[in-house]
Length: 432
Ligand code: FAD
Image (cartoon, rainbow, N blue to C red; front, side, top):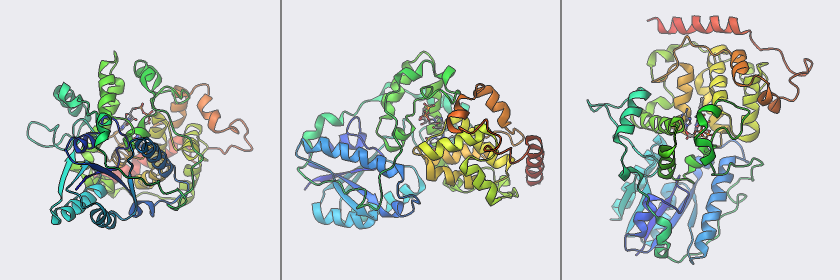
């Protein structure tokens, strides 16, 4: 009887913790992947870039495994049905997979584990996606941190060599079971290929100069663009942290810790995917004007930095972090549109969509998050433009008609007026 390794958001053969443990178990290993119809059927766009990305990465892995005479067994179904098939087909002795912390995944993994145990199939799970998970970095009273800086200090104080250990799964592929199966085509899955491109995995040149370059949206090499790779596990977080730790400058390491901070928050406060972390903020009377929301989505607000960001997102599936902060603040405060609308739009469009980071950062922008911007801080999108894109290089890249007053709209709302209105609405929601 073989054991099964279940690929999920860890799409790599190198330094993959659960895969390594499966390969070292003494049993032959059959890797599986499930194209989860419960997730895929909810995607609005048939050319969803994430599906193309996953497909591309799995195809490459399967090709590499083919050289060993092995391969992934693919399923296109709901996970519980797929697992019934897997158990029938392989009669496994054990199942190995890496932890996933999102509410949907937690529920799924519990159900699948319960199902497998009914058949006396052992389930072994491992940490792979983060350095510290769940309850590993807590305050001295045992409660989770809700403020970033003390969390980061504790995270750094706890970091040791053992956390950065490499799990060289790639060296043990001979333990794979023989299997041959081609990956279903995108068409068979109900999708078409995206026209968007995907970033490479090279990042080392970014780290040392990051604190100078990270806030310049026009500089496409100013940040690592690793977020989509981190989302789907095509890079190992342990190897990134090793490099980040050796760098002379630690700002980039800090950002990777923000990622874990929000994952930890989502683990402890899963209800915050659609509820304000600070509940008083759920009393805000959002205006939720649909035509203004459309203008924001299409990049037609008349504020160049906001519009350039939204157009970059719509075209490429990526938006620079500084600009994400500005467009999010603009939606919540200038337009008084519920942060959940913006969160959902980003979830649809971002290649790197990560529930924990997206919800955490949206709540930060709305002011409702745990370690959030204070409600009275309202970004001025014109000052942000002057500061971070003074020569309009970024703005013009995405808005070619910027200089043409007949084609580029004037601002949808005046900044001063919007600011005063936001402060009033926020104050009245928070006063009790
Ligand atoms: P780099 O600047 O090179 O940073 C390296 C890595 O650190 C990133 O890949 C990411 O994993 C992590 N990181 C950086 N900034 C943050 C941050 N503020 N919070 C959490 N992790 C961070 N990031 C996502 O990965 N998925 C999302 O869905 C997402 N939604 C966001 C929504 C809003 C409103 C805002 C303001 C930010 C959001 N971010 C999100 C965080 C950040 O904008 C992106 O991680 C970053 O722009 C990705 O580009 P990069 O890989 O070049 O990042």
